[in-house]
Image (cartoon, rainbow, N blue to C red; front, side, top):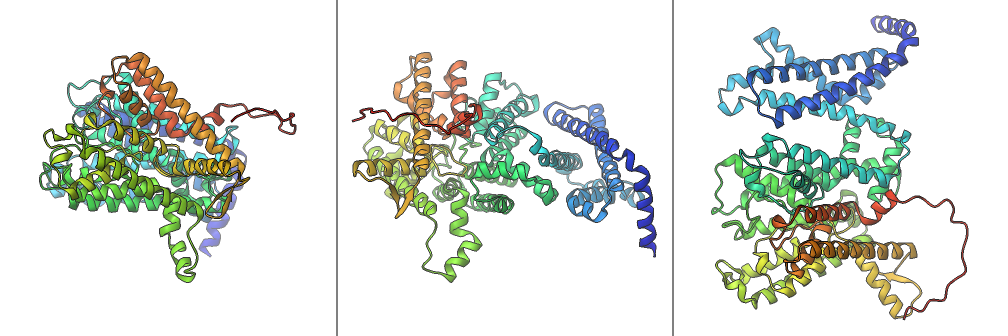
Length: 614
């Protein structure tokens, strides 16, 4: 009886306010956007600039106001909704978060202050003094992010191609990262960061490259390292995937068909029905591998590594796990991994290598090899093989890693420069093989170094250029032209030599469109490398040509290996490398599609030309 009365009351109220519902909700959306932007600005101000007691008071006041507004907005939207059950189902996460705030606030009635603040003050641990403020910021940021990504269901109104949106997301990410890194609290006292260096560092992190113009370990504070970690994670999996994931958390209907189509186009999913499931799987796999990697790294650090305490060891393990899985190559040591104690942590290096390989294989391969569905199918049908894409990626990856290991081991064993202090020659045979293996794996777009690259022999540098150019595999965190692209190009060449009409791989036929796309990727990437190298040589004539060429390939293929010349480059040269990193990360063909004007019609054909090519 009571529920019927409540329902009748709701119906009466909704009928009364029906005429004003649309305008009220429109105003509310504008206010929510305004408060969301205000909240982000307040959080950035608090994190990026020195604070006084007065400024902290106003920051906390504005944060509490924002949370109160979101609670009011949630209740108002519920009040205007005709289907309360559907509303709670679609906004379950937001509702639970706001309920947690109300429960926490109710602590004032029982203990005289919010429950969280009361618990923090009762601990008496000095390091918890800022925990309440940290919690408020994280909570508010999560609310704001959740609110903003719900706008994803309105993407259908945007007259923009998926390629353009993909490219734009990286532009926004790089600019936002540069602004954050330029804030005073992100840098150590006295450390300066020019506009060029801020953009370069942000682009290097967002494009998961790893080239640096300043010492990452000593130039940035813990907050700066957090920003770099965020850029690496967002850049490695792309911000579109994260936005879609948050939309998925807020309710399945929040991720619209157009948004699913964009993700499907970017990730090469086979159907819209698999997009939501794949998004969930990608994020879960990423969190699982990075968490497992951090745990393994924590227990494999050498005792010679000078950590100041337990929490620093935890932080270094997390940072390097995320950096390795995303093939970023950023390290919290001044000499990357060529630091005393780190380069001889051989178990640690093997774990890091496995993380790099996992990130470079690509999510479709991981799912096909170790996904529950795939494993169950192979148990029920032992004769069933992995997909052609998986077999091609795995075989080519193993071949390239073995080739790089052998080349590095053979030539550096003959390199006289390695007789320098703590050089490659002072290692045992087993340690040499592990070092060679790690550098071969890292050359596939990760960029971690445990040796001095400035003294490597020319054959190794040149072969690593080839490994960097090939890079990782499609739909992975790595760069390069991709293993499958080079494989298709190789098999196409073999088919031409043997005068075969079709390109075949593992007794499967490759479509002519795929072969043309592979040729286009390699050709245009080669052009970018050539033009970039030419510009760098023209602007830096004093540098060795091979080193310049090596640096350019490392930037465009988002590797991060360096012979040590990057910090000393002029600003114009740094901007050339920024452009190379950006084009390498978004993909040269994707960038071209986003900028090109689509053809009006293709329903015509010109006469065939007789051109001699051989």
